[in-house]
Image (cartoon, rainbow over all chains, first blue to last red):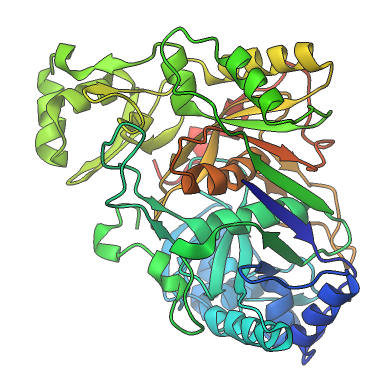
Length: 254
Length: 254
């Protein structure tokens, strides 16, 4: 059993209103790759947000009192705090150097994943507004062009409690569910499995992040081939990344 | 740029006092794989714990009052709670259905990673006692036999706050550091990188978990080839998984 994780080279710097799905498809072809059924394409959220014009010019931001308070506690820039608040439904923690918030989409992460890396100076990018829809658009285009059935993951890298360092996670999906449910299956000794749900989309995003993170040339799309999608596949529009979010009532850390 | 993630097939069920490193090396050879420099081998913690005899027979466990209390709150078996407590230095949360603890090695996770899957009925396995040392032993053997320089990760799958599903993480390492520090590097636009530390060993463990989790045949060793180890490599004994643990003073969730 073998999985390949392949970087799609030579994707140009993405700008507002670029046709991202077309650019990705053309790059795949230029890389000499023929799309197969069950190919999984992991796309960095930054290029999706940029193509969709989801960029905020910090100069144009006027911080509210709440943003100034958040800035004072966290030590971050008040304008940046305002953009974080504009993309936040719930502040989980605000401490010196650390802001953990819940995004409208339900992700709990640092700064609502608002980020200024890999965009022009003076700009900042929130997550794509509807990352499942962004994934669907790319999957639909790739499937129509290739006649194959792919899955698409929009990925981000996020920190964790207790452990240093960021890991790839999925923030949008299409063509697959985010988790694989092994409940009902048995282990080597015939006992029911314990750790029964696997965060497949997050693991795929982490595998892709190994390649995205190493490149100094803006590698923003990664193909994962050879993973058996059987247990997690679905048709376009039939899955949502929110399936991976913990029910707040069962969440001990918010 | 391409990474391959390859399952090492036909490793027999591991028993106490098995020579795990020899079994792994022989399986690699039987799989027709020649070890290269920078090959990374990810080994599931369960087989390491089993080979090292780190198995507890539940029948022989006498729960303390503290274990009975933990069992009453969590709804878990008192003997299992006792084994969890025996492998715990600090209880972070104990709620119905959920026990989050800190292990002597410093990992914060559910049940101190004490687990009864993939071991004989009536037994339970804590994590290996010194997982870095376990990784070192395997690396040393593989390197001596092959004349190459590999890295070894002992992996587990663990749950997370806020998101459903378990992901592969590294619990022991040799031949590499757990994180890649991109501080000082710049992005596509020449700006200093923000999300600057990547949890490389955890991402590698997650990539391996995609293969371990899918196999119904106890695939417990995975080779990752093609990852550029330059930024994280080190000699045997010069790195510790504890480098990835967040300093308690900067940890907002304990």
